[in-house]
Image (cartoon, rainbow, N blue to C red):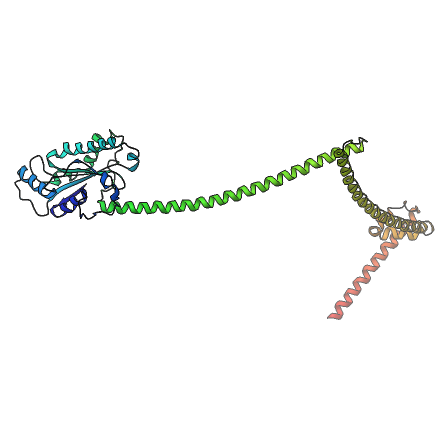
Length: 378
């Protein structure tokens, strides 16, 4: 909805009626090749918009003086979205816009309507319907009809026209504001630019996704090839295992393929046995070396054992003295042999006493030596 004072009416009339020399008010593109498809539901007055308005004001008997800046014409643009009109037959479209015109006639008075023209040469078909805002009590007042009543107007349009045609009403109490055509077109252009940018972003994202998909497909094919290769090798090994088992059992194949598989299986088994033999030979060599070392240790131990037995037999006192004096050092070695030759108990006690005496004497000597070192240092 747009309100016009006296000074704007002429140029609006030129544009609405596509008169020669009209200046485009908005920036919406007009396809002049389709202008011939525009049509009127109420034809404009022969004497023009301005003269019709002045004549109607006189006929209504408007008493108050009309100011120079007074609103003399109100214009509605009534339409829906592009999807609503796509594929719609011309007669159905005409019926829809006729309902819109009848709504305005009923609400604002048929005698006040200046013209009603449908434009088909722009993006979406739409109706321009213009009328003089004369009130029932014969006053010229756009405020009477519209100030604070736009929400009620929207509801009325929906109830009387929109609902019949399956259209939806805007949200009641919405914070959205009505904007003039210029601002609306600016918003539309920005939305279009945003949509195009979003489309470009989607194309880029789609290209990236496609590249990722192609790479994934390639990796999948490589994985499938590797899998098939592994399966083939596994099956081949299984065939060779069966061929080897048959060859070991003396079941010689009769066909060329069977013989070939048995020969290959025997060749592989022979290589495996050669490797196993080489490893066993090395292990046998290492074991032989360890065995030789053990035999050398055994001979040395036998010599030591014979020497110890000789000492025990010929020098039992020395053997006993060594046994009791160095038990911790000799015990592991002594345990290899038989127990010492038993000595008379009194002699054994004498030996123990001699050993204790020697220990005490060693302690005394050590104490003297320590005192001497202390005195010298002072």
